[in-house]
Image (cartoon, rainbow, N blue to C red):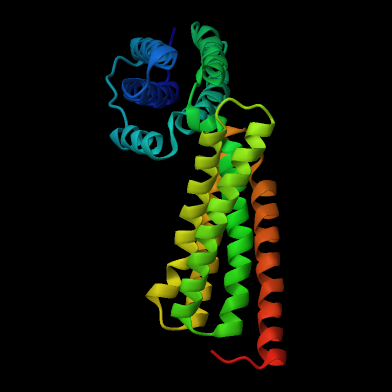
Length: 288
């Protein structure tokens, strides 16, 4: 079978994709255990097999993208194996679409496409990661922290207008709310008969406290209350962006609707609280 220069270049692109994914799966397997590790090692071997098949047509060695391998190791470390694997699922889907152009040109193309489909199915069923079981608790903690504390800080900013006092008030309010939220989640999970209500409570409280820290810290770094509020709102936007992306990938939901809804709620509450703060300062005539 004749391999044109154009087809050879395309096959070398596929070689690079396969060898890179083989290295990524192997790296993720080293940090996984049990069934997860076995499946990842097997898929890594199959990706390497795909690489060798394409190599038979091009006759050339292709090196993996070390940067991609490194990035996936970092992603897995920070966001967990589930998130990293779900991102790889997207790569498997793209591979299926790209390989379809080879149908009728390369005999093994159909077989490799089917293996990529099998990879996706296995990846969706393989994950056993504790933190994913408590993603609802994490969402609850972050949602409440962003909505409540962003609104409270906006209101306090225009009512008090003194950064350190606002920061201290926000920190005390936030930590108390985190403990209260954790306790409420514990009681809720226990009432529903869940096996680990304490873990759910801890995940909720930790997510809340992390959000509190990021939202309050600008008031201890800047002397201008307006600048501190602007940075706090920016931090809130970044938290929403990152966590919504995480949830959309793990739960395979559309990103933009989730992001838009959370931004609208959080900043809507902040705007109303800002108006309340202005009104309180104007009508109550209280100066601090």
